[in-house]
Length: 148
Image 1: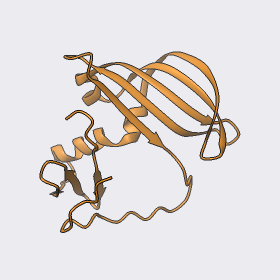
Image 2: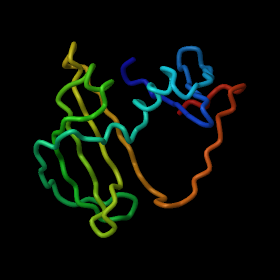
Image 3: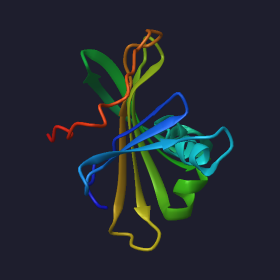
Image 4: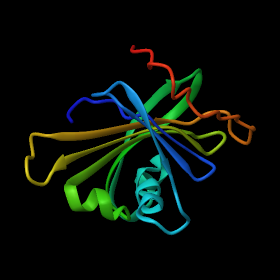
């Protein structure tokens, strides 16, 4: 669906996927080698930033992300994600790099649908709390989700 927020948790081999149509959480137990495991590996936001090849890199300038000065670059790349490569083309990235700590603070991926080029995929990821323990709890699957 276009412009649909995706909310997925993967904890202890269990997938929690919010279905916006039914306004309910789907809970899927996952094996170590089943198709669910492949799906989760493809949906991992970091898998969208594993490159086969980076074709061009352009320095855009400098911007602040969460109070940190970052070098902004844009590049076109070939990616490792077979799922994305099957459905999408023309992968373009914009990245905000903390040039002092050498950490990516923010990244945006855009791509065009192979069947309908006017349909655009946009994935935005922000990174923070580097090297800190981040507790993640499964969602309350009995309650309706709070809509923004």
